[in-house]
Amino acid sequence: MVEEVNNNSEKIVVEDLDFYYDDFQALEDVTLRVPPNQVTALIGPSGCGKSTFLRTLNRMNDLIEGTKVEGTVLIDGKDIYQEDLDVVSLRKRVGMVFQEPNPFPKSIYNNVAYGPKAHGIKDKAELDEIVEESLKRAALWDEVNDRLDKSAIGISGGQQQRLCIARALAVNPDILLMDEPTSALDPVATAKIEELVEELKKNYTVVIVTHSMQQAARISDHTAFFLTGEVVETGPTEKIFERPEDQRTEDYITGRFG
Image 1 (cartoon, helix red, strand yellow):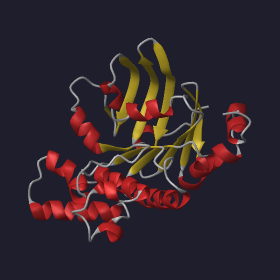
Image 2 (cartoon, one colour; image 1 turned 90 degrees about the vertical axis):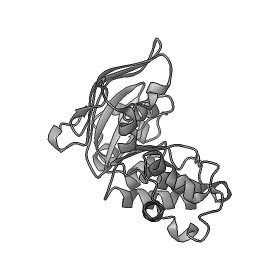
Image 3 (cartoon, rainbow, N blue to C red; image 1 turned 90 degrees about the horizontal axis):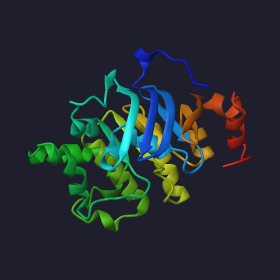
């Protein structure tokens, strides 16, 4: 069951998407809408295609040899797989945060300033402003503002993950992809990231892969349930969790499998 929506109101529109790793089809006929300034959660058992799908939204899968994409992915009505698309600009607009915190072995300041510098910003005052604003948006500024010159490797795992979020925000994206961003974190750090996600959707469209049913229920507005490379059901989170239309969705959410 695929939710009917008005295309004009959607940030991301995916139609009939097939994805292959060589001869293996990882995604089959995926159709999904992602509304702007909301959190869309992708749930489903391991190996069902959630992370592969997430990486189709900023063409990270292009970096893997032997992959093939068929179908349509529109962001703000524009096909991101058209031949003349600037992939660097796409990844600037569509930021990504990974499962394991992966700060660069640089200072906290230079982690956040890295992207803006790469995109040509050299003015120190401007970089200072971007670093401060990005760390504030990632709810980290108050914890690190007195040690910006210290190594990012020396802060806690939860702080490192928020630093990676700040690094993604520093290039001013409008979409943030998050691939199980709390799976390596303790409950306290997880709660901080969840609070942050709630705040971020005021300014960004967030798509998050999570294995946690409770997390999806807590922080997402929309949920898509993936199974063996297909989207079984998608819709408002409350409806998916409380009144699913497909028996497989109910079985997964209630813990009968997966």
